[in-house]
Image 1 (tube, rainbow, N blue to C red):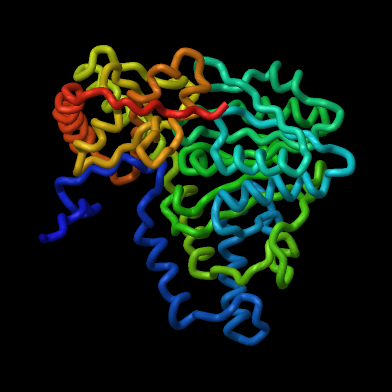
Image 2 (image 1 turned 90 degrees about the horizontal axis):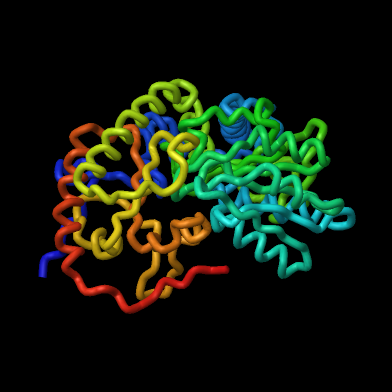
Length: 403
C-alpha cells in the first residue's frame, strides 16, 4: 500500500490556518541560522575565538529581542520556549518569595503552561486563586483587585489567549499590581507578532515569548525579567554551569537564538502591516462563514482580540467530525476531546454561555502567507465537510472539562 502524501506548505491544494499552533520559519531566519550549524559552530561559553564569535552573535540576538520588548539586553533570559519561560517565572519567583508570599493569582483561561505550573505550586504548598472571565473572555479588574492578599507575590495573566485570541488589559492589570506591590507576569507568546508588547509601557515585570509562534525556530524562547524597581527576583530551576547570569543553566542553542533575534527584527519591521492585513482577512473569513452558516457564533470579544484570530461555533456540527473531513485545510478545534482521553476546551467552558458550544468550535489562525483565495477556498471546503459531519451519528463519549 502506498502511503498517502501529506499536504505541504507548497501544495496548491493545502490551506494552513493554524498559525496559533505554530508558524513556518521565515526564510530569512533559516538563512541566518545555517552558518551556526557548520562553520560558526562554537560554544558561546568557550573562551577561544570560536566561542567568542558565537557569544557575540548570541548577544546581538539578545539585543534584538530586548529592543522589541523595550527592555535591557541583560533582562533577557533565553529558554527552550514559552513553556519553560512560564515555569521559570512562576516557580522561580514563588520559590524566591516563599518566606514572605505564598499566594499566586491567575485566570481560568490561561495556557496550560501556566495552569499546570500553578498546580505544581499547589502541590508544593502554595495557594493559587483562579479568576473567572466575563462573556468576552476578559478578566475583570475589580475581581483581580479583590483577590490580591497581603501574601500575594505574583499575578500571571496571558496577554492574548491562544484559543479565542482575546487580549487582556495588561496595562490596567499592571496598575493594580503596582499599587499592591505585586509582580506581574504575562505570557505573550501569541501576542508578540501583532501587538506592541513594550514591557515598560505596559508595566510588566516578567514576560514569556516563544520562537515558533513568531516565524522563528521551535525549541527556543525567552523570559524577560525586570532588574529595576520593582525588581523581579527568581530562583533558578536548572543548574549546571551558571549560564544566563545564573538564571538558566545549559549550553546555549546558538543557531536558534540567532533565529529568534532575526524573527524579532522582522516583527519590528512588519508588525503594523501584518496586523492590518490579518484583520482584513479575518473580516473576510468571518463574513464568508456567516454567509455559509447563518447560525454561526463567534466565541470571545471581537473588539479586544488578536487580528489574526477567529474562534467560532457551528451549532449542530461536531467540530471533530468536521475536521476529520478536511484533509487539505489546517484548522483546529476548541474542543480537543478524543478517544485518547483529552479534555474538552476549558477555555470555552470558562466563558459564560459558551460551554455547550465547545464541541462545535473551530479555531482559525491567519498568518503572513494567508491570501484571500485561501480564505475563500477554506470556507468552501468547510461547507462541504460540514454537510458530511452533519449526517454523522453523535459521539457518545462526553468531553471531560477540568474544574
